[in-house]
Image (cartoon, rainbow, N blue to C red; front, side):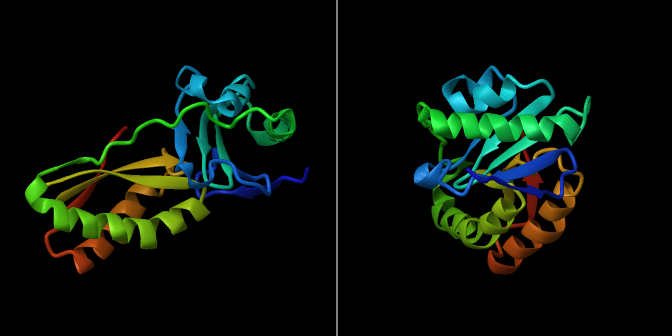
Length: 186
């Protein structure tokens, strides 16, 4: 099995492309700790490696964030070996999908929220996935769109600029009801 590796805008995170489906059409899964990863045999295997701080499972990729202690020197080879071992084992990537709610918004704003979600799905998520992450809609109130960044985007030094200058400007252009975008945790 050949696994490609790509850098991401987040220097602490690498993107691993196993050349096969990871989550497929089941969405994405972001694990910020070993405890949170218990429902994913793959993420649990990666968290067993010393130096792994975060694991994100995308449609056809895995991003791993290192904790800054040892760097990618030895950890990269260990992650590659763990990925190969997992896919060869035949174990599932994830045991059960976590229900991701619709977000917090007033039902009166349902049409606006659908426009926001459509723009996020068609224009933002593909670009963010290319960098090893995901963006999740968490709510819309008083003209403010609340978004959660996952994977390589979580903790990335340029994520706030991406939200403000990229996502916010685009949403404000296409959806006049949007006045601002803010990042929220989980």
